[in-house]
Length: 88
Image (cartoon, rainbow, N blue to C red; front, side, top):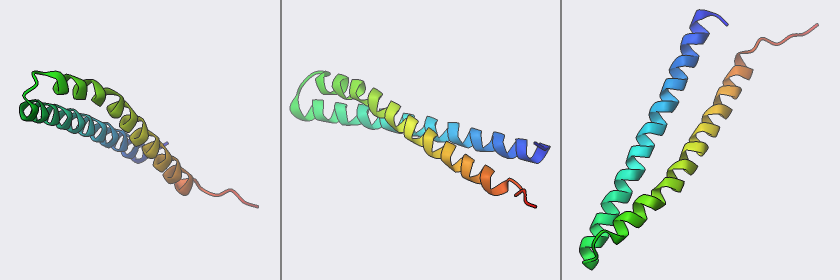
């Protein structure tokens, strides 16, 4: 693996980590906002906010795994495409 390949791989991994971080923050913010809005609308204290925040944990884990698997598949396709073909 030469220096350019290593830099490209590092940049790709940093992009994946950035995507996962942003998606996590967005899911948690949406759950918090929806919970607060529904609690205000129905005049319940923190019931829906707590439920939505707890419910956002498995959703965030699922999305994290899906994004990671898609990125790994993309990296394998790129690696297979860049790999020199051996022949007679």
